[in-house]
Image (cartoon, rainbow over all chains, first blue to last red; front, side, top):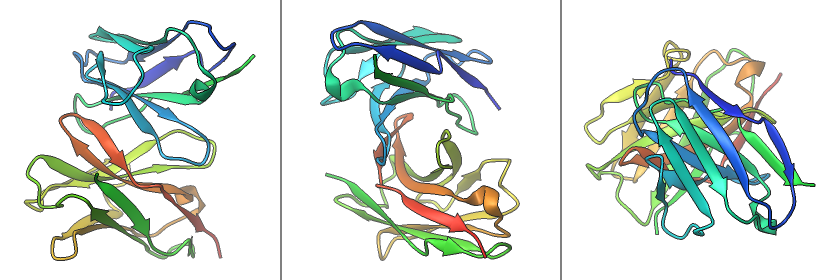
Length: 107
Length: 118
């Protein structure tokens, strides 16, 4: 299985901050990398697909970059509704796996 | 707008079989562009892909679960189902049914908590 490792595991930030979350794959996955946001008690929501494509309806303050093994998710200016847990996930080969999550909370 | 909804028992006894159904509305499960998938999440933990089914009936399962899992389709009801046998406390989790298409999971059900306990 391809292992996905996110860093940091948790992050405290303030409204208006720029934050970046990193995801590293245990082998090259080209750009078969997606990002999801999950709030407590709800299902994950797709934010970014194919490493850098913004899902319809997702604010443009979210952006993704990377290819191969190293990827980033950046929120350019945090809003109150952005405090949540973020997961990366690869679709390169089966079984699909997720990162362990990054919990973003308010400082 | 596609919607998915999980249903089934919220409590299963150890060694028994967990059975869940996902009802899809706003779109056809017979689409040749999508896989229908189950994902689970233990409380406070990360997400685990369980497996998927295609309209052809072709299935793929997580190797860690393949000996215990089965996913099936009922196109007449626009539903797909999950069976997980010989459950233990480690199978306690929120189970999500999810649509997969074009390399990502785009529509998720709200999830159903299944607890394995006697």
